[in-house]
Amino acid sequence: MAALINVPSKAKRGDIIEIRTLTSHIMETGFRHTMDGALVPRDIITSFTCSYNGTEIFRADLFPAIAANPYLSFFTIARESGKLEFEWIGDNGYASTASASITVE
Amino acid sequence: MPTTRRQFLYLAASVTVIPIVTPRALEATPAMLNTAIRNIVGEAPIRTGKVKLDIPPLVENGNTVPMTVSVTSPMTADDYVKSIHVFNEKNPQPNIGNFYLNPSSGRAQVSTRIRLADTQRVVAIARLSDDSFWQVSADIVVTLAACTEEVN
View 1 (cartoon, helix red, strand yellow):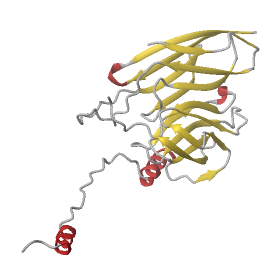
View 2 (cartoon, helix red, strand yellow; view 1 turned 180 degrees about the vertical axis):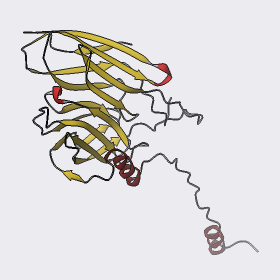
View 3 (spheres, rainbow over the protein chains, first blue to last red; view 1 turned 135 degrees about the horizontal axis):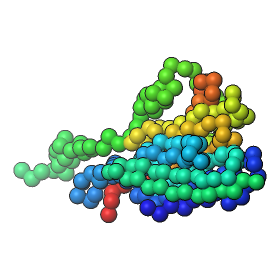
View 4 (cartoon, each protein chain N blue to C red; view 1 turned 30 degrees about the vertical axis):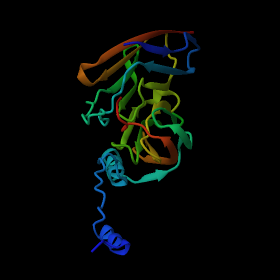
């Protein structure tokens, strides 16, 4: 459930800011076998969304080829002060959210 | 009659067992890669250029490979990158990730960490706002593979 979010706390209006997120998740591929040959069922995060004051600004579909503890970095234009919300959705009903606030001057 | 060395070798050679190998069908083929790409792109032509794929050419550990895709684009309301799609050639599944952008992204660049099951080619495709597709590919040598090892 733990997520690390890196968003600048302050930005000038119109600046392009980088948003970096890291969340803890096993991202079990569903292609691995145990020593006795049993298939380990898939358990991955399938979707990530980031919204900025309620508007979606970035979305990603993830596949088993994304490494464990998915890291994502992307950009957005700092338009107004407010809140960035992050949501991860995955197999077996996995859902996790996080948020960060930004002051735009 | 005792078996001579010559007879023994002859017999041994004639019954040499062909080892039965049952490889797990765990590799996406270039055909699967092509299908995955066509699922996204449709029949549209894919041009080379505009997209940059930053990924180390030699990877020691395929379990976590840093990757950055960037696209040359002004990112204005009428000329921007709609999405970036990343594919691989030889993982069990050809898709790596789909990333959806919009003009408010400001910069068409995405970074993540991926898994690579083998030495192979990674392809990144960008869809621009005029629905044209641009691609770039990179070859990566992987020494320790990901995804398919046994769980201890």
